[in-house]
Length: 404
Image 1: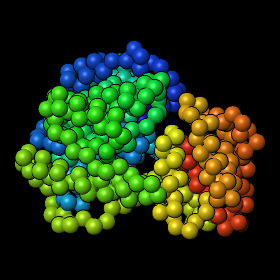
Image 2: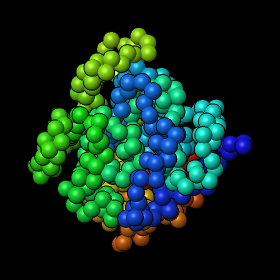
Image 3: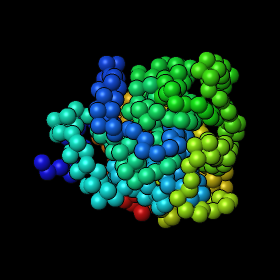
């Protein structure tokens, strides 16, 4: 039987990132996906590997990218799986050394392999996210990736990436997001995310959280005899990207100890000392120089505050007007207040993109700009010598990246 094209097949599967119907998680189980993986050995390790799961509310994407680049520069073969994407779903799966989005020819060979083992009917039972996660599992083994990094999609206990059975778990900043699924408090959210830990997990790293969360971390790890190491939390006014890069530089020597015990060797002679890491795509990214547009995907109250606090350090002396777009399941009013406080203090402007996928925060209906008028608005802000910060959703990127 001829196998379908990878993305075409994906388009036929249920995609919760599009429907936003996360309530289905109330009845969701990983068991069918686990059974399918194990039926064909699709999550088996062909050799010793270092599998790392990165969980948390904020920062896990940039930390995953920094980790992948660091290990690639050290000469290791790396597979990186992240979500969501900015413009193209292929961005989610990357292979060293370039760590560019996965190639079409790799996806073609992968799809052929999957359909030679299984059937269309069987694979059609997967969700869109499970299909991509399956692709990462199989491709990383087929391409002999010795270091595999999986950014969790939502939570941890019920996230498809849990089935990688990580050796190491990295816990990033915990905030309040997806509360209908993960719980209404940071404590319940942290517990859900720690659910990604498996019997293989022997080491947990975390950005030092507030005391109540630190207690949960310590008790969780002590009960399971898992080593725990923490790194200081982000200081006010410091760029979160710089801080996350420092966190990764703290992690790597300790992860190298795990690699040494597993006797995993680098693929080639890499850099002896890694000095610089590239900014991850879509995080405080300069999308355009004129007008000067910076994009960040901050989409929950904690993330918005962190991004606003990072601007001064990342772009000294620059004032920013803001254009935001919030999906309906986000806390738009809370984030709008923080954005208002910032723009009032800086004497700049705030607008919300009035597009069909976004919900305007209540009370801010007069602060809107339509997609058709966006270019005009960007130019008028640029004429005042101000930068433009675009945030609120990964989906905002496609509107802005077309304007440079």
